Image (cartoon, rainbow, N blue to C red; front, side):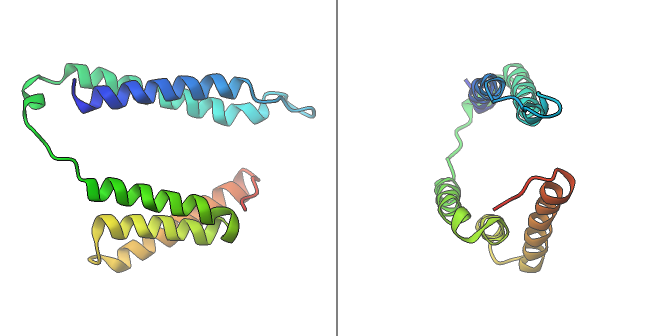
Length: 144
């Protein structure tokens, strides 16, 4: 079984679980009762669709690709996990903008190293403030 099939199965299980749990969210008392459920429900559907596409393409791959051995980049895997744990701990303490700048910046430095530092900084700040703008000004969702 190749890695696309494994990730597709895990994503499909997670997407179905997320979809079912989003249906259990409380409905709004004022206005459209389904309004708070639309966004998580659409994320669950999108995750199910992407996982199904990944499964389909994974099953269609030829067996010859599976025979080649690839090593797992443990440095990137463990580094990403460590950065994610730190992000989870500092998110409520220092807020969305500084913690997200740290998170995205640390991931980009982990992947790209010190080359392209200016590009990493521009992407980090632009992405963080773009996400903040979308949530705060367009969706009217307050971030910590």
